[in-house]
Every structure is written in structure tokens, then in C-alpha cells.
Length: 88
Image 1 (cartoon, one colour):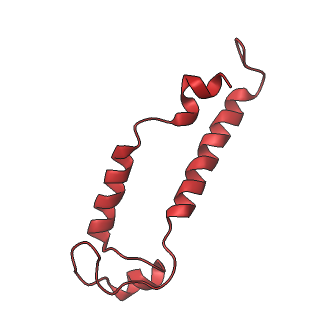
Image 2 (cartoon, rainbow, N blue to C red):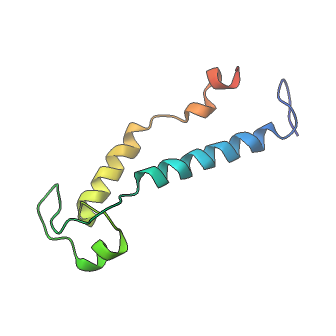
């Protein structure tokens, strides 16, 4: 049930687009290639199980967690939800 200027189903389309954007961003951020034996950040050894589970990994679990938290903090708002994008 849409209201105002939006057509029926517009809310679901926007939610689907937001989810699809997040999935695409996550897929693009997955590492590829050869895994490092030592973490690029701290120099600690990366366990073999992690290197096999995540091809192309370059960071230990601790450093990867910190990097992801910093990246999340940098995303201040959902651009699709901004008023400008709804006016197009």
C-alpha cells in the first residue's frame, strides 16, 4: 500500500534494491587469488584453515574485524534512502 506520490509496490522495490546493493558490495569486497601466510597489518601468521576457507585473504581475523568495523563506520547513511534519490 503506497501513499502520497509513490506507486503501489514502490516500498518493496526500494527494499529489494537496498538488499541487492548490499549483496553486490559484499561480493565485490571478497578477496580472490593467493592467500598470504602473514597478515598485511600486524605480521602475525594466518592459520592454514583460514587461508583455505577464504581464498586471497590478506589479514588475520583480528585485523580483518577492525578493518570491517572502520569501513562500516564510514558508511553514514543509505544513499538510496536519501530524499534526492526519491525525487528522480
